[in-house]
Amino acid sequence: MQRYDRGTALVIVDLQNDFADPAGSLAVHGGGNLVPIINAEIAMARANEATIVFTQDWHPESTPHFANDGGPWPVHCVAGTWGAELHPDVDAEAATTAHRVHKGASGEDGYSGFTMRDPTTGQTTPTELAGVLRDAAIERLVICGLATDYCVKATALDAARLGFETAILLDAMRPVELNRGDEQRALEEMTAAGIHSWSTRMR
Ligand code: VGL
Ligand code: ZN
Image 1 (cartoon, protein in one colour):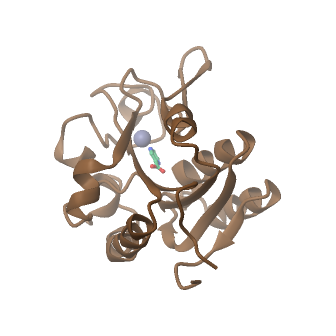
Image 2: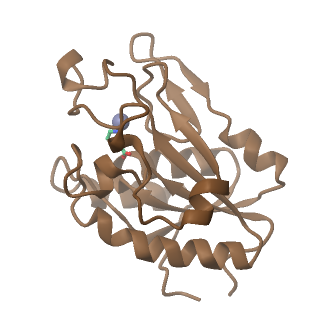
Image 3: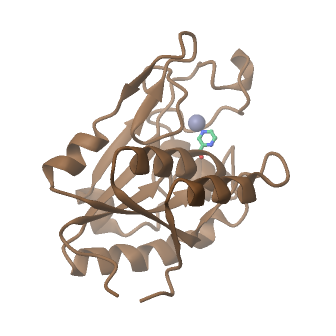
């Protein structure tokens, strides 16, 4: 089965230095190993005229998302810093030409590429992602990246809710696993939402 075509988008979640580089402030174990795997997906997606989208965590210096301000996370992916850049080994053509969705720029702490959540009111607002995909007549999404139990999960659940036929690439994602079992629970939640679990080795 052909994974990519014009009606499909490859959504690469938060493949940024702070998550994917061992020196990143929220380094995900094995995150850097994903880069060559995801580059192969990018090549396949491009060869079959699929749309490619990167999401990027894009925080202000101070936000309730960060431990300094009462949140769960160390400072990471501050807009415009090294940590917020895509990993330098990401396919250069895709990194320059693919659409990028920056999330959190106004201090929102949502994890999904589709929605942002105001940390004080709890209100969610959409990002441009759904519009970008609809404008390109996308019906199917293949999602990978970092991290399985936060931004990949939130993005995939929103995608399914919005009616996209959604699959995740199990060997092209890694969990934060703040609590033991988070990865497993995330995978179960996604399966229950009708999201397909694929591997990059399936052709
Ligand atoms: C993420 C924790 C905090 C993610 C983002 O990309 O999964 N995790 N911010
Ligand atoms: Zn974040």
